[in-house]
Length: 159
Image: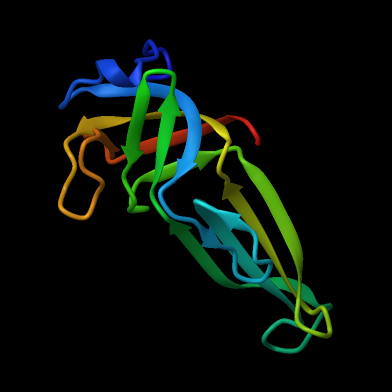
């Protein structure tokens, strides 16, 4: 999984190479989690409803009703500079981070569980270093999915 790679300072990143960067999350823009209003730069949210099965037999169960994943794009900053983490969620894997859960609706028959990546979290990011595209911040390098189609963010310390 390339975690054996040596950490690279942001100033030493070279385009076209897989790199491992460690630093703090800095927001490009923030998004809010539906249902709670918590601000973050990434979330992965599952919504469930407490219902009886389709045929009406047996006891009620928590049945998945919706799944949502959003990423606002963010910077990782170390002592030498900042690098932009690509915004798309194709191939993005976030390990760790804050967990949030709660009830939805007046009767409490719906609930959600979310995994969050917040501003200030200390992370390790592994991906392919590239130059910015049109919609991305200029003047900085970008980390995208690698040849295997993966961009891995591992939370080391929560804010």
